[in-house]
Image (cartoon, rainbow, N blue to C red; front, top):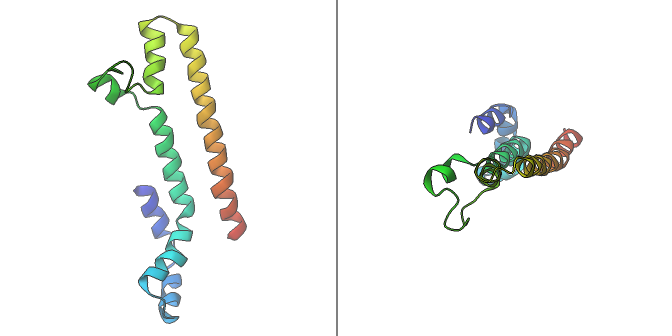
Amino acid sequence: MIILLAGLSSIPQSFYELARLDGLSNWKIFWRITLPKLKAPLALALLIRLMDLFKFFDGVFAMTQGGPQSATETASYFIFRMGFRTYNIGWSAAASIIIWAIIFVIAILFIRQFFSQEKATA
């Protein structure tokens, strides 16, 4: 929410004033001014939440411990289980690197998709 609030506060009020002078409704102002200007902050917030989703561990560990029969097991809980319950440290280290690589590729794709277009249109 703080990221979106910062994005909203960075939109100049003159855009809204000019849109009102042109007779745009609130709905058109949102779709034509606010949402395009919030594209990069929304993408950043989504990327941060997506990376946080890959790291989700404590809720699974506290409530279900991956059960029943690994139905609620997340990637981070799988790495924990492989490393500290079955003592396959190499396996858990390799899984950690794979998860890191997946998050890295997703982050690069997000940055290319959203932030390169923002500079081209600015």
